[in-house]
Amino acid sequence: MKKILLLLLAASLLPQCTTYHRVRSNNLVTKATLAEKHFYKEIPFTLAHYLPVVPVYIGQDSTPYSFCFDTGGYTVLSEELKEKAVSVHQKSYIDVKDANNQTARIHTYMLDELSVTTVPFENVGFARIGFTEAEYFSCPGIAGTVGTGVMKECIWYFDYDNQKIVATDQLERSPTSDQPPEYP
Image (cartoon, rainbow, N blue to C red; front, side, top):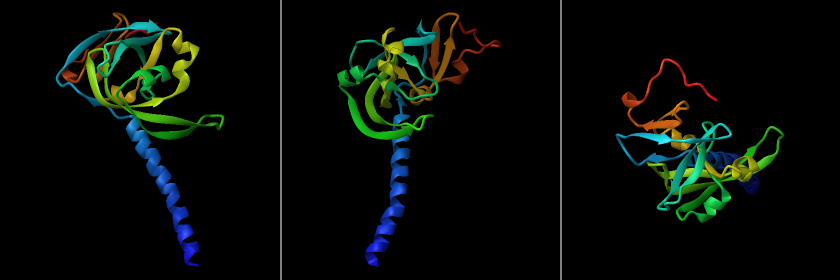
C-alpha cells in the first residue's frame, strides 16, 4: 500500500516538474539585459524580403552577422553561427506543437554578449530553430533574428522612409510622428 501511495504521489508531482521546466525555459529564452544606459543610436538597415536587416555582433567577435527583427518570436541564431560563437551555453529545451499537432523540441541557450550594431546586450537567451537554414533566410545571408527578449529592453523606432532604426532607452528622446511610416 505504501508503494502505491508513493507511486501516486510521484505521478502527481511529475506534471508540476514538467510545467516548472517549461516556464523556466520560456523565461530563459526571452531573457536579455541591456548593457548601456542613457543612449540614443541611429542604426541604418537594409531590406531583405521587406524585413529590416542589421549587423549583429556576437561576443568579442568583430564579424558582422545579418539579423532581421522578429517582433513576435525568440532571438535565434543559425546552427552555423551557434557552433562558431564562443560564448554560447546550452541550457534547456522547450517542447512545442504546431497547428498540425506535430511536436518538436526547441533547444534554448544563453549567450554572454550580443550587440545590435552598437547597442550591447548581456546574458541573451536564444533558441536554435532550423528556419534560419531555410532558403528564404539563407539566400540573403540572414544568420539569425533579434527577438522580443532583446527588443523589450529599449525603444526601437523603425523609420522605413530613411531606412534607419532609432534605438534608445529614453522615452523623451524617441521620435514621434502623427502619421505612421508607410511600409513598402
